[in-house]
Length: 151
Image (cartoon, rainbow, N blue to C red; front, top):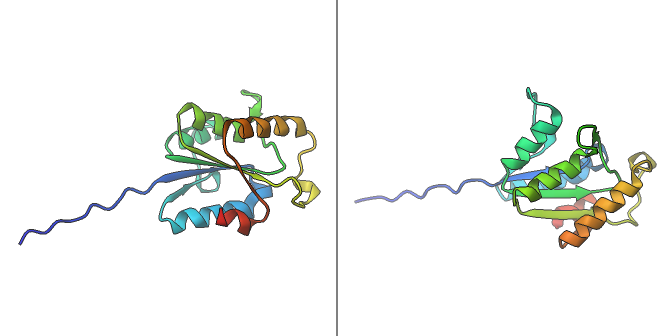
């Protein structure tokens, strides 16, 4: 009797983009949700060593992904001198240029946070970036890591 073997579905590579230190518990909840769906999390905390520059590595990994998730908190992020934009914004623009489906989650402005996680220096850049995101996407807001994990 002939048997048919089902081919296992290919896991989807999901790139999680955000500033890092301020959003560690949020990134963890998103990673947990992606893994529960048996998909592959791609994020800078998993990169390891690479011969390319950080920005080249980020761009390469975004382009290799099937879905792009952007988390925006109260920081604009590390600015690439070459591009004069944050690495997070460059990752986002790479996903958009490559037509990668993009889901945007923005922290609620009323959510309390430590002042060490607020980017006062680049507040205007961050606000412009959020404005762009809100005009180009249906965005979701989140409060706590658990709230984000559910979304």
